[in-house]
Image 1: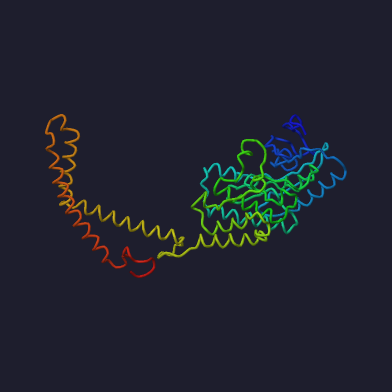
Image 2: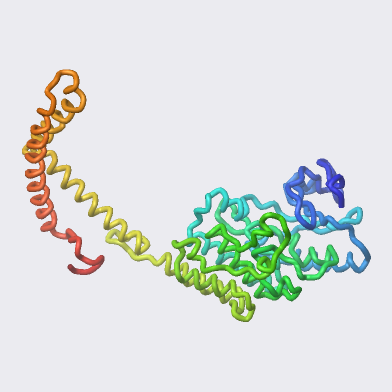
Length: 393
């Protein structure tokens, strides 16, 4: 299909799908926003394969694969609602999903995605992968570009309508295809397996938390793919992002093994490890008022409370007349020295006044601060600094 063959706005397909605009162009086809005239102009997505159908056998394979994908039913997969052939081209119609791809989210957050949030997404992603593997489908094209985050915070796979399986059949190609950085060696060699999707999930998480994929300089400057592009080696993730936990690093190292036999045996197994990690991160305890807070958050709350107490004690000591009067004299002398002395004279005379008054302010401040601080520590229920949370000092 040539660029000038792109469907213009207003084109009506199957007598009901009215093309509104071209959303984007992919390697295998075109993706349009359309209205379903038979369903009160409801918006939908129409995907058109670039290549014309070559033969009856080719058409039959496309139909079989489209039928298999249209039977997928999962809350995290955009639903395929129709499939048809028109003017020699094959089309799929999907529900319109509102939101942003994970690639877009990553760019908008300026590389500041947190581990707990990405792990939560990963658990949902693994749930989808486990489901399609049970249905006998290998995705082969998992990346942040084809996974969306809805406004409600839910994950949605949006490109099953242009999944690799369908693309191979459409283009009459072998399965030795992939996306640099997300594709493991066996898939490049034309032997994709369920473990290939595990690798792609690991690479997706790695990218979202680091912005890094190991591509050669030659590829990046457009000189073609090199050996390392086909066999990527991911250094431990904490080399790029020290904030990542050792547990997640271990999970990703297992998922990103170049030898498929050393990876997770299934998406369910990887999901289980991610679930255990999520439970550890979000482990909760109840505070004295019955409000549930994460353990590390409770420790932060304790420290903030202690800091607040110290500030209140310092403010009280500062307001004592024995502190306030000499401190005021010191401030006035400093103002005179810096601003008025050059005009009215006096030279260095204010310096001794500043020194004496500052000393006179510090001594009563310290006395009253420690006096009040000691009194607060003797109050019932006050926790000393050297006490462990929940224990005795």
